Image (tube, rainbow, N blue to C red):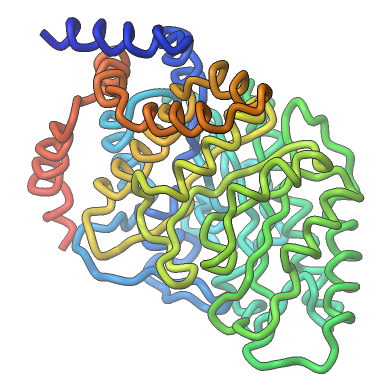
Length: 418
């Protein structure tokens, strides 16, 4: 019966010029990068049991069962992956280094501290993306890292950035899948500063040093990420959107657009076709801000759908990397991964299923009446049947069937971590 429903859905899409099989092939080939920090509330494993220090990042909630070790985090990621269709990647932050209980400065990290993660990704058949961690560290306590007025602090974080690019390139080379290294820093002022220029001059200079070493883009590309405000940087953020857009354009870096990092009245989707006129690539951090950058779990909402529509309509998928960036400690963390990733994939599927040819033709002909008609008709096409078929083909649970597996895992594994 399910196959019959899918056949009928395919026929309805075909009548509007949509090749459903080609859509499913594209969706299956498009990876989503799962962020490790959802599994342990952005704690990392540099100092097990230690609290966060410096940098303005926090998860809210105390749902039981968070990962307390690298082994537990990997087990949770594997469980989530079984419930998510399609290709996956790992999005890893540097503070998740496998240090074997030793104290190692972030400025001295090298690939040996992440080799076990690379090996794990290889076993999963995943690629790996990477993030320097310019937060949760004593040298971020005053709110400044790469833009610090203290040259010693700047040099420390520059060395960390250099090390992270080398680690990411090694991962990309070993896994045969290019890594994206994303640079986000928490630098800024809680209250209004007098000097806005100085920190930005220092940041530009520091970034140039971080990126000075030429790395084969077959193994790694660099992205820079802006933010409107953060905890402790409510009035002034050094790395603003305008700063990083200019930096990415002039230095030919990828630009990261995070769905939670702009004013609530801004439309992230509207930025995509503009920035990709000038930067080589786009990193999407798919998140959901509620009133502020609160990193709620991604759902199938209008902003997420609009972002995916712009990527597909512009033919930008080959120049776009899609990663998740939320951390909700108020619900089951594996469910959060599953809901967020599947919602991002559903948004992409809806974009791929648009009757693009018909919409382009009516718009080009100036027939805006017909354009509006087909835009509205597309909203009620049987998308759900296509999604269910994708899950079946990818050996992932259909519908909400995955929830039972999460509950069973919580009872058998997570509850023991209390």
